[in-house]
Length: 119
Image (cartoon, rainbow, N blue to C red; front, side, top):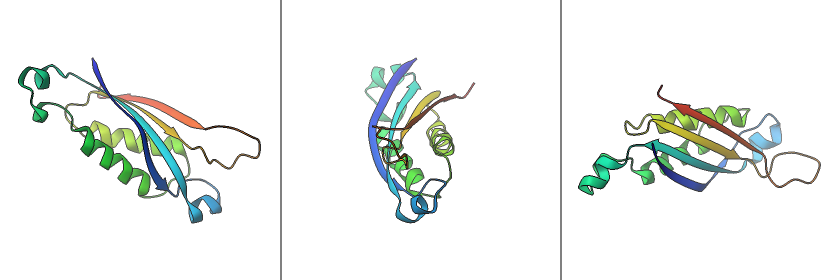
Protein backbone atom coordinates (compact mmCIF):
# COMPACT_ATOMS: atom_id res chain seq x y z
CA UNK A 1 0.00 0.00 0.00
CA UNK A 2 1.23 3.46 -0.89
CA UNK A 3 1.25 6.35 1.56
CA UNK A 4 0.39 10.03 1.31
CA UNK A 5 1.36 11.99 4.43
CA UNK A 6 0.18 15.37 5.68
CA UNK A 7 2.16 16.65 8.64
CA UNK A 8 1.58 19.59 10.92
CA UNK A 9 -2.00 20.58 10.11
CA UNK A 10 -2.81 23.26 12.68
CA UNK A 11 -6.22 24.37 13.89
CA UNK A 12 -7.73 25.95 16.97
CA UNK A 13 -10.15 23.76 18.86
CA UNK A 14 -12.04 23.80 22.14
CA UNK A 15 -11.47 20.20 23.17
CA UNK A 16 -10.73 19.02 26.69
CA UNK A 17 -12.32 18.10 29.97
CA UNK A 18 -11.53 21.34 31.79
CA UNK A 19 -13.70 24.47 31.50
CA UNK A 20 -10.69 26.62 30.62
CA UNK A 21 -9.92 24.42 27.59
CA UNK A 22 -13.52 24.74 26.41
CA UNK A 23 -13.59 28.51 26.91
CA UNK A 24 -10.17 29.59 25.67
CA UNK A 25 -9.35 26.84 23.18
CA UNK A 26 -5.89 25.87 22.03
CA UNK A 27 -3.94 24.85 18.98
CA UNK A 28 -4.07 21.21 17.95
CA UNK A 29 -1.66 19.74 15.40
CA UNK A 30 -2.61 16.75 13.26
CA UNK A 31 -0.41 14.39 11.26
CA UNK A 32 -2.00 12.01 8.78
CA UNK A 33 -0.72 9.07 6.80
CA UNK A 34 -3.24 7.94 4.19
CA UNK A 35 -2.89 4.44 2.78
CA UNK A 36 -4.04 4.01 -0.79
CA UNK A 37 -3.07 2.64 -4.18
CA UNK A 38 -1.52 5.50 -6.15
CA UNK A 39 -0.87 3.44 -9.31
CA UNK A 40 -4.08 4.42 -11.15
CA UNK A 41 -3.37 8.12 -10.60
CA UNK A 42 0.29 7.79 -11.55
CA UNK A 43 -0.49 5.80 -14.70
CA UNK A 44 -2.76 8.51 -16.04
CA UNK A 45 -1.28 11.49 -14.18
CA UNK A 46 -4.86 12.05 -13.02
CA UNK A 47 -5.85 13.75 -9.76
CA UNK A 48 -9.34 12.27 -10.02
CA UNK A 49 -7.84 8.79 -9.42
CA UNK A 50 -6.21 9.60 -6.10
CA UNK A 51 -7.10 11.36 -2.89
CA UNK A 52 -7.06 15.15 -3.07
CA UNK A 53 -4.98 15.88 0.01
CA UNK A 54 -5.88 19.57 -0.06
CA UNK A 55 -9.52 18.68 0.44
CA UNK A 56 -8.62 16.16 3.16
CA UNK A 57 -6.62 18.87 4.95
CA UNK A 58 -9.57 21.27 4.87
CA UNK A 59 -11.92 18.59 6.20
CA UNK A 60 -9.56 17.67 9.03
CA UNK A 61 -9.21 21.32 10.07
CA UNK A 62 -13.02 21.58 10.06
CA UNK A 63 -13.24 18.59 12.43
CA UNK A 64 -10.70 20.15 14.81
CA UNK A 65 -12.48 23.51 14.68
CA UNK A 66 -15.88 21.83 15.01
CA UNK A 67 -17.87 20.31 17.85
CA UNK A 68 -15.82 20.09 21.04
CA UNK A 69 -15.06 16.71 22.62
CA UNK A 70 -13.52 15.81 25.95
CA UNK A 71 -10.76 13.51 24.70
CA UNK A 72 -8.20 13.77 21.92
CA UNK A 73 -8.86 10.05 21.41
CA UNK A 74 -12.37 11.00 20.31
CA UNK A 75 -11.02 13.78 18.11
CA UNK A 76 -8.60 11.34 16.45
CA UNK A 77 -11.47 8.92 15.78
CA UNK A 78 -13.57 11.65 14.16
CA UNK A 79 -10.64 12.67 11.99
CA UNK A 80 -10.10 9.06 10.88
CA UNK A 81 -13.77 8.77 9.92
CA UNK A 82 -13.53 11.92 7.81
CA UNK A 83 -10.48 10.54 5.99
CA UNK A 84 -12.05 7.14 5.33
CA UNK A 85 -15.03 8.81 3.64
CA UNK A 86 -12.72 9.26 0.66
CA UNK A 87 -13.18 6.19 -1.49
CA UNK A 88 -9.49 5.91 -2.40
CA UNK A 89 -8.30 5.89 1.21
CA UNK A 90 -8.08 2.33 2.51
CA UNK A 91 -6.25 3.07 5.75
CA UNK A 92 -5.35 6.10 7.83
CA UNK A 93 -2.97 6.80 10.67
CA UNK A 94 -3.96 9.86 12.68
CA UNK A 95 -1.74 11.54 15.25
CA UNK A 96 -3.25 14.38 17.25
CA UNK A 97 -0.83 16.62 19.13
CA UNK A 98 -1.95 18.69 22.10
CA UNK A 99 1.17 20.72 22.91
CA UNK A 100 -0.64 23.02 25.34
CA UNK A 101 -2.27 20.28 27.40
CA UNK A 102 -2.97 21.33 31.00
CA UNK A 103 -0.07 19.46 32.61
CA UNK A 104 1.71 21.00 35.58
CA UNK A 105 5.19 19.57 34.87
CA UNK A 106 7.44 20.56 31.95
CA UNK A 107 6.72 18.61 28.73
CA UNK A 108 7.00 19.03 24.98
CA UNK A 109 3.86 17.42 23.63
CA UNK A 110 1.01 15.01 24.24
CA UNK A 111 -0.10 12.84 21.33
CA UNK A 112 -2.63 10.15 20.57
CA UNK A 113 -2.04 7.99 17.50
CA UNK A 114 -4.64 5.67 15.98
CA UNK A 115 -4.79 3.56 12.82
CA UNK A 116 -8.08 2.73 11.16
CA UNK A 117 -8.91 0.88 7.95
CA UNK A 118 -11.85 -0.21 5.88
CA UNK A 119 -11.19 -3.86 6.70
